Image (tube, rainbow, N blue to C red; front, side, top):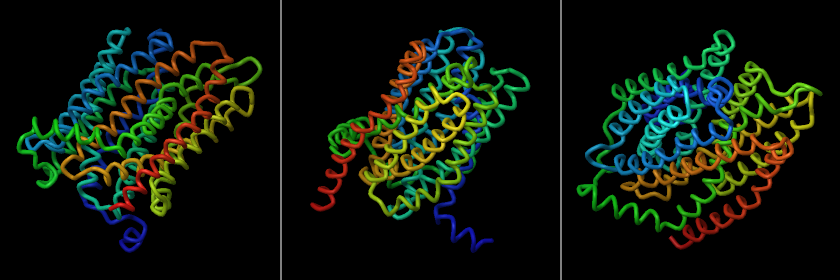
Length: 421
């Protein structure tokens, strides 16, 4: 058994495995709410799709603050990786409990603002921990391991959420369980993760040196090019999490008269999506090791484009709509597992060790930007005519042309740097 594990699992630091377990438990809670939140706020609270999109986008406003603060705290000698993760878990737990009590647009925004701050603090710190404990040879697989744990947690959360919603119709319970999952994550980090490495947090003058570090990072041409394409990718992902569940529930044609899948079907579809991601995460990461980061990201972009075309096909395929939806979610899963490890490893490799928190903060800000753009855009589209809704998916697919052009420019930039060094 041990020889089998050594052969098929990458050799990485024990703390990464512990972090992965903590992330799995936390993502179980996230899975409870991720795909059902838009349905709950529209169909039970009674808000419009556009209003819910704006409310969910407020998550990104505080997320920007959290990511900037998180990058500085992560690189700070006073705080470091571990304390930033603890602060993130505590704030996120409070945000989930506020969302559990949501009854109008104001409380929706407050809960999302709190949650956004917590998630903003989380990402620079957790990615920097993985980068600290790995090298270029095993880093992409280490990031794949943590994403693998994320996907298992999400899958379990979505399955359990589907069961709970179907049996109790109590959406608020999902947010309470999400809050409890962050409390469990806090405990795992507090007990098992060591304080940050000395070499990674040597800023003796946090204010002056970190301000200079931010300026230096923002002058890094490679990082700025990656930021452009990363915002596009995260906008794609935001459609998967915010627009697509509501589209499946209220708009996808099932037959000549009926529109919308039932909750159990939606749960099954997203569970299928995560099963594909779980099964393919490590094999794809190992396959992508042979490719440059820009090529791996280009493959991801093509998969997104084909997936969006499949969603467009659901608008007129009627009884076959579930097949096309399942195919699209399979392609989206492959797109994500191609994207996330390569993107994180790319940032790790171009970031100086003492600026990793800030570089990952900027990387995470792309997610805030994507989730600021995506939910309001998708919510607005779903409030329009069926013609606009259907062709929205084709428009997303066509945007791959811009994405590929930027990735080609990034490839040349990275190649020029390698040849000159």
